[in-house]
Length: 527
Image 1: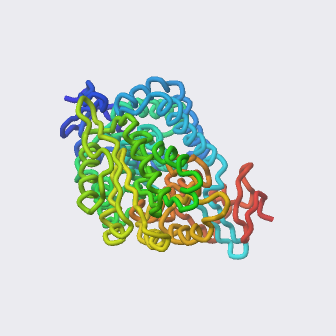
Image 2: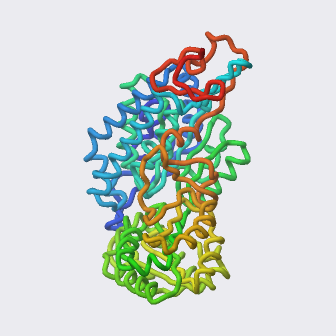
Image 3: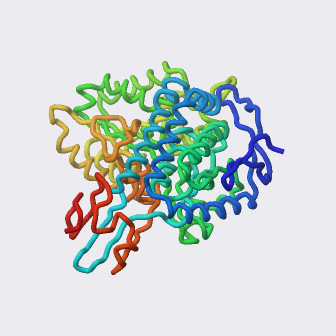
């Protein structure tokens, strides 16, 4: 019998368990006390059935009630910040301060409050009114639960029960079934306790938020393809994500994926000549931040061969060797990083430093830097774009500027792409060529800036072409953009005024709501 219950159908109850597991302490490699259940198909079906009821019940609640829940939840997380961040640090090996307690947790509550504000205002629904035809439309809830699979590397801000996907799904009016990540079940449990209490504070249906700790692979595929599921949000490894996508696609169910990304950086010749030493520091910090376990970690850096580039590579190698390797999230991250490094070497990459696990307790890998020629990269671009998730980087040394441009044409889809150029304008023509090629291959293009940070801004695109995500038109960060993934377009043709959603009536129902009326955005009533 497992120690910890699941949050199912509006209550904490003993799981119908098909097995159990324990979280691991990455700093020691030892299990953390307490068993968590692997839920059976019976639990899955019960969750989906309860969510269907909650989806119907939520139609009777105004957006303000959902906003009140999100605000109350954020307040409860803040009030229990030390306990939640402490558990997250123990389960992930990530530093308590400043990473979790001072940065990621405030970002998490900030996302929830931004989603609450957007739900109250309503402009995200893109209410559209054509007075000549009396056709009116808006974005509304999906009519079923959103299943959310969170990743291992952000236990708070991307957690299935507290992260950006969660906030967006609730703001759009959908119930959520969260599948906790096995790396941090205790953190997810503490968050779920506060979410459940906040539902009571706001008076929302108790089954609006449910959480299961783990499912079999087969049941995960069933969940994303279930007839009663509205959509799925997934952040994690490419192979697992594509398996879920195949199941969802076969059933005609929307699924929004954030997968692998190697986030190429191009350092142009005049930039590396004028401030190479400064760039070494930025590069080493960015690649090794959080032991490289960021989805926007710069995995490949491209330079043109020169004395300045050789000094940059030498300085980066020394920086990697002088920096203490960080703690990785789990044993599988260590083995996966080793497999990727070996594969890159097999494709011709030269190992400059690192390349092996660190002996001793816990999950660590040597800071690893590799180098390959531009010619080799162009011969086998797909193989050399393999993601090495963790504290590793690959430098591609192009023979000249022409080869640099050719390299920029062969990248797969990525979340980000960065170009460092000369501040005095010496790289302008080359910048234009590289940017033209990268623009269609990345979701976010940066100039003279490392990609590691992701601001929670309405203008942010944390998405990109495949294989970074499953669809280039959506973002997982940034409200209101992220909300639209979990919404359906509702159209009303000649529907009587008293039967319309309030956002589509002639009178504008709220301050701050903008609607597209006869082709013009307006905050006024229909005249």
